[in-house]
Image (cartoon, rainbow, N blue to C red; front, side, top):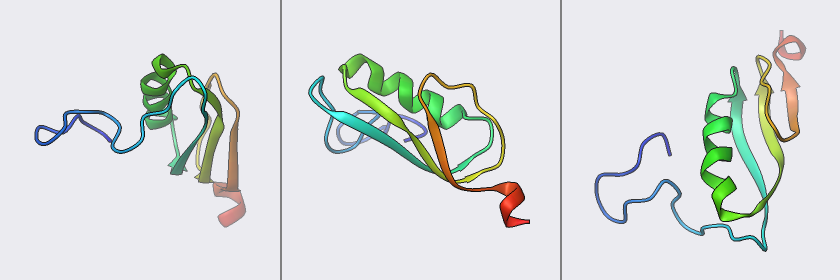
Length: 79
């Protein structure tokens, strides 16, 4: 979620909140700078969940993240 909702239950994560007993995979469509993945990591870290990695469909750029990043395609492979 880009912003915390201003209605309903005010949370950054909708649905299930991970716990220290969970292993989490972060999924996104496109990685350009890694900003949204970085923000998601920062939201999940306080839960104590183990973040296995980030998985994206298209990797357009590089991101220096503290977890592994895997992609289905790179931009070069699609051009």
